[in-house]
Length: 322
Ligand SMILES: Nc1nc2c(c(=O)[nH]1)N[C@H]1C(S)=C(S)[C@@H](COP(=O)(O)O)O[C@H]1N2
Ligand SMILES: [Mo]
Image (cartoon, rainbow, N blue to C red):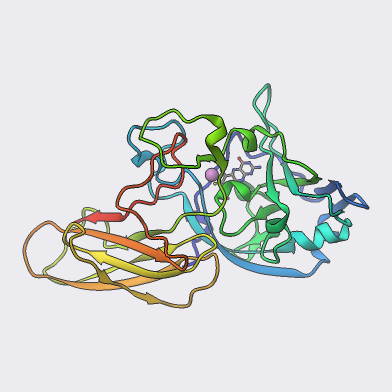
């Protein structure tokens, strides 16, 4: 349920910077009454909260889009669930006396690329920034966040695509407008309507990504496994960003009929839910096992993922062939 750190995906645009753990500071400025320059010790004095959250890269599954799109060709692995500990972003903003003119919180990081490549600067809208579950974390799965995952400090914006969770966080600037960062103006955008695969989309029709899409992943049996005749156990995980998973269905007849899987464990917000199912493999044949999740808003994982120019939010039915 909790992804061990050694199996947790790493997505870093350029490089993991060298960090001076002892002298790390979080600067808070912009639309605030009293700008701050917090040490790690000062941050740790604030009330600590624990959030268990899925972290999924918006590009997870990009490799499956046709026509192919540029970017890391992730298949199924750019997802994990971890337990993060840190201070509430809202507590930090309140301490700085955030003004009512503040609309977005711009997040800056320690990885500053050389030359003309734009730095990884993101923004989170004020409502999500002030949400009690949005945190600035220093621990991951009960240990100090490893360097590649953003030591010593990263944002966790639960339920939203992974790029909101800025690693090596060292500055928050409260803005009365939108950031002019490349990674907001151009990057991490999705068409506001369905587009034909391969179509060019006008910049004015692109909107910032936010929440993750409803999705499931079959983890048992493995793809291409040889199964013994008899009962076959199917299991996996399903998640839906800020929404809860209400149902997972399994099909073993190419989607003609579906059987509800059993959801086990509790649904905690932002995390994945485990599902289990069993079917009788009575015939010696190839089986295609499909999974399809539904969330609390009625969104259902589609048979065909919606193509988009950057290959984000792939969430087609999961499948394993055995
Ligand atoms: N500073 C910084 N933060 C970053 C990134 C980055 O390149 N630089 N990558 C983002 C992306 S695209 C994702 S999906 C997540 C991945 O977090 P992980 O490497 O801990 O899995 O971090 C985000 N935070
Ligand atoms: Mo990402």
